[in-house]
Image 1: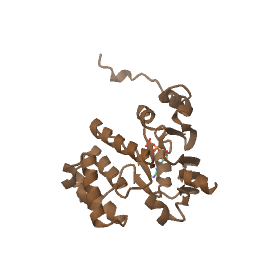
Image 2: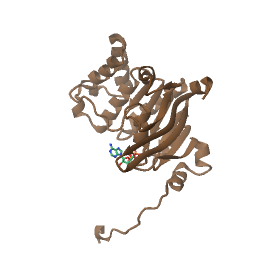
Image 3: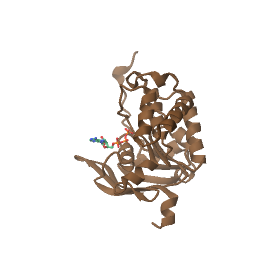
Length: 257
Ligand SMILES: Nc1ncnc2c1ncn2[C@@H]1O[C@H](COP(=O)(O)OP(=O)(O)OP(=O)(O)O)[C@@H](O)[C@H]1O
């Protein structure tokens, strides 16, 4: 890859591979996420999306392969690459005896940000994500949607260049989802890059300009949403790519009459 290409690519995955015992979760994934794109990653349950995004953000060590963030190798130069990424991991494990406000502050201070900047951004994020009451509530008492929103605030506080979000809209109410969409849209419009995984094809079609379909730990299709769907709607194309046949067994024992 030339220097120019490396700068135009926000996140580059090469030959990413991960095995858990007998399960080959990710089977040599190559993917380039261009800068300034809204990139959806879709796939059936167990396709390898979370494992791929975890390796792409330095949360899980690959068995093989490489990741670079704006041309910087993630695994050999983490001190330079990781500050460029904001991550909302799947099933966020966090410090649940902190309040929402403390958790955002902690995330900012961990990134080495000055206290006054952290304080200002924390208050902005709590307001923008409609998390007023969550600021003084312990994380352990959060609903699933509040946890998601606080996780997103922690991913945003250091103003990363690339956001990698695993199911950011899961369990989030429609008003908050609208707020999150606006924040992410503005982030991309001003030069940022968003990569998100989702099972909701309509959301990916509405929000994303690019999409990768993952199945069996491989990329089945990737490119602009228009190219990937090829004249169909994304859901039809998705089912065509991953195989939509399930056992249509009739659960007669469930019938009420
Ligand atoms: N820590 C782990 N230990 C063992 N197997 C794992 C582990 N994490 C993932 N797997 C397996 O790897 C495969 C890919 O899982 P992954 O969570 O990446 O899929 P996914 O596409 O994110 O699925 P979903 O849409 O259901 O969240 C699955 O077969 C899963 O069972």
